[in-house]
Structure formats: structure tokens, C-alpha cells
Length: 280
Image (cartoon, rainbow, N blue to C red; front, top):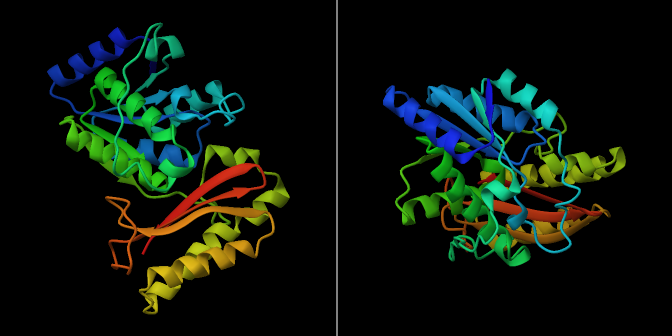
């Protein structure tokens, strides 16, 4: 496995890969890798000849008073994990590489990004779409793999790729969960053992709501109310939003469309912000 830290090196790699008739798969990350990331890398390896992983904690997707400074960083361990999962190359840009002095160009998707995370974290998706577009131009992948756990991010990236005619196939990897059901996230490292017990209420609630839908409940209002009620039973949790939405457009639905509805949840667990979702 090789590491690279310059734009020119990554673009040269892309040219050589494509000239050799090989496909290039890409998994963008912010590091602090866990099994969910490794599953995305392994998925990319089944779909492309050469796999590139990027590790970059993107400052533009963090709002004021968010956790940019304390976001977990573990580069040495991350590199070992990347190699073990089958990555061939890792791109390690610095902030100055991605946002050099005088940088002033940003990309903003204004529809799919507007609700949910867009309402509670106004700067978030502007930072995501900008950095992902830049990484696509640098790495020049044929496919890029994103996790279903960040369902709205996945939808926003897909919309950006379509709207801007970016020649990248977006592949979704299923949410990886720990043995207690909690969706794997780098921010889980913030949780104490007792906080983690409280956080289990989120996946347990999603399972109960999915069971209601499987039993025939279709009213989104009823499902949202029950989700909110169940989460409120855990004293540590403060709900940010609960919504039943179209997984492509993120628009709220009145009634569940089985196979085409997403129950999305964001909540504070004490001082840690967690998101999760389930397809209904």
C-alpha cells in the first residue's frame, strides 16, 4: 500500500490506472476508522481494480462550536486498517492542499441538503459537497463508496454527481452495527460505557418502528410520534429530529411507501450528536 499527499501524485495515479485499462474505486473518510469504514473499503475492492482511501478531517463541514478540534484522529492505526482491508493507496492531504490560501470556491446543493441535517447543521453539506467534489477531481475515481448510515449525505452526493455531470458511480454500503445494535461511528469513541447503554435506545427504537411498518402501519405521523416517544424514555437522549422521508429527495412523506421510505433520526446523547436511520 502506498500513501500520497499531493494532488499531482493522485492525478498521476489516476492517469496511469485508467491508461492500463483498470478501474479506480474510492472511499473518502475523515479517519478514526472503524469496521464500517473497512466494510466500505472491502466493498470498493469488489467493484474496482484499484482502491484509494482518503483521510482528511474536513474543517468546512464543521460549524461553530462543533467538534473539529477534538474529532478523533489515529493516523498510524488508520493506515494499518486500510492496508488490512485491501486499500492500495491512501491519500493524505493537508488543509493547505485542499484549501490553499485565498481559496474561495464552494459547491452547494440546495434541495436534498435543505431539511434534516441541513436545518440543524447549516454549514455541513456545503462543506461536504465542496470537499467531495474536490476529492473526485483529484482522485478521479470510477466508483465511490459511501455508507447508508449517513443517508442524507449519500443522497446529496448522488444529486451533486447527477447535477454536475461528474462521471462517478456512487455505491451505497449498508450500515455496519456493533453487537449491541449501535451504528458504528467515529463519534462513538466519545461515549462512556453508561452513555453507550443509553445510546442503544436509538437502534432499538428503529427496530420497533420497522416492526410496526411490517405489521401494516403506514401513517408517517404515527410513526414519527412513536419514535419520539420511545426515544424520550431514555433520559440521556434529546431528540433533534425524527422524520419519514423519501430516501432520494429527503422530502417528508405522509404515508410510508414500503421500500421507498426512510426513517431518519438525530439526537443528542448528553454532549454527543448521533444519527441513524432505517429503510422502511
